[in-house]
Length: 106
Image (cartoon, rainbow, N blue to C red; front, side, top):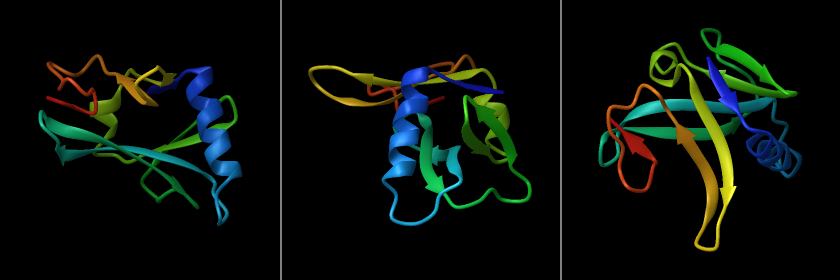
């Protein structure tokens, strides 16, 4: 369904360890919006929703809702650090095009 690099898994583990409340994993989803039609959304969550697909990637639980699943099929999530910025990046084979910031796609 979805892949995460070791760097992305480590970033999520660090975020979970620093959370103020108990967290079970990270939700990755797609919503309408952004400059290209769809945008990626991520957030720490205490538990999955009943309809979520739960993927365990190297001990990191990733929750994907049924509507986002087809848009995220085969997507590789990475955490990159450059001189200009750091953050998650998405390599999505389903995206026909994406904006220059890489946070939204069509």
